[in-house]
Each structure stands twice: as structure tokens, then as C-alpha cells.
Image 1 (cartoon, rainbow, N blue to C red):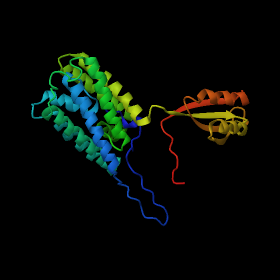
Image 2 (cartoon, helix red, strand yellow):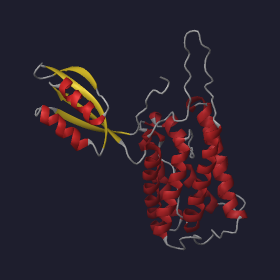
Image 3 (cartoon, one colour):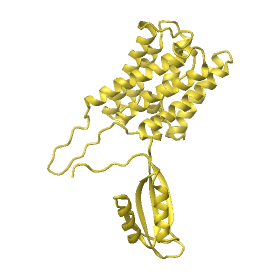
Image 4 (cartoon, rainbow, N blue to C red):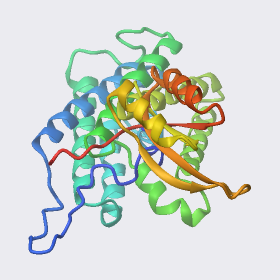
Length: 315
């Protein structure tokens, strides 16, 4: 269950190389064994969610994975889901190699290979009957949509977190969205909308299947959010005040962390102002508000949700 990389980062997994004076260029294709280990787990999880919950009830994943499931149903038996996953995704990622980078492409192709192999094992080798009903949820469409979306979303989220993507729709969006006058997210949404409409039509008007597929996609995309960004997202507080030094002093004493003060100028009044940039978690927001307004009742506070805080660790 893939979420558009545009909502996260289009360059995730690509190791940037820096060339410093007097130092050789670092290897920008730095592939890590740990990443391959977690990508193996991610591919297996994604395959389990799709083949055990979505595939048996003819529910559809999103993107190229969903297209592969549809083609599996429309073509002879020897043209199966695992084959389509490789045959469609591999050329797409190779096409986007120059733009996405070597590391991202290698990680992605590896994850898709594991996803395809695991799907083959579950569907054709292991003693699971995934033809007419889910081995775990039976014929309950809602349960299959929920758990199929949730589990495959975990697999997709892990893939993104460890440097790749498990669906070629992201590469297509990066390559073609701007040419079509669309944002990356709208490109993926339009592709999935067309896919689900086609699924409903080709299933002889069984729109309930397409609708439950949308439910699975929504749950999967939210799961990707949590896997990639974390459950406890921090917030950035932008505090505009005339008492910046006093406020930062109290904040530092209360939270054992200091903010950053930026000089500013009121656009209307022309008065000199100071802006405090301060990071807190959502449990600490009210405490920050109380501290700020106790010192400066006229202070303006803007809160922004952030997904990650990266700190320098090399001293």
C-alpha cells in the first residue's frame, strides 16, 4: 500500500555526497546491509497484507501494485501477480534511475523483488488458500480492507524509511506530473481514481469492491504516515514577542532546551520584534503558551507540526 513520496520526500534513500576542500568525494552509492535486511522484512510484510487480505476478495492495492492485481485477474493463469509486479515496476524504476539516484533505485528494486517472491510463495507454494477467501478474515470485505491496508501500509512505510519505494507510481509521478500540470500527489490520486473506476467496471459493476479498495488505500496511506513520520510528531512554536530574552530564559529553565531568536520587523507598525523558534512535543504546547503569555500577554504564537528533528551528532 504505497503513499506518494511527494508527501514525504522525493529523494528519500539517496545518500548525498559532499566534496570538501582537501577531501575526496564520498561514495554516493553507499548501500547499507541494515537497509537490505529491513527491506526484506518490508517486502514480506507488504506481500502478506496484499495476498492474504486484499487479493482473495478481489480488493485492489493502489498504484502499480493495484494495476498488477487487476491484470492478474484479466489474463491467463500463467500471467500472475508476482510476474506483473516485476514486469511493470522494474522498467519504471530503471527509467527513473537518473532522476531518483542509484541507491534509491537499488533499494526499491530489491524490495519489489522480495515483495514479488513472497507473493509467489504465499500464493503458489505455502499451504494457504487465497483463491476465494482470506485464510484469516474469511469473506468479510471490511476486515480484509482494514487489515490489508494496515499491513501493506506497514510494509510500504518501512520501505520508504529504509531508502526505497515499493511501487513505481511514485517514479511516474516525479517524471510526468509537472508535464501534465499536476502536483505529485494529484497525479497519484488521479491514477488511483482511474484504476478503481476501471476495477469497478471490469468487475461487472461490483462497485462495493472498488469502494472497499478505497478504504484499504486510505488506511494504508495513514499507516505509512505513522511509520515514516512517527506517532509522536513534534511541533515548532514560532513566538513573536518583545520579550524574547526573558521568555527564552524561562523556556530553557523549564524544558532544558533553548530556542533560537530571530530579529524581525512588524510589516504594519514598523516596530522591531523578535521571533523565537522553539521545538516542543504536543504534551508541552499548553505549558509553552502559559509561560509565553505570562511574560508577554501580547505575544503571538504560531504552531507548526514537524515530522522529524535532525541533530548534528559528530560533535
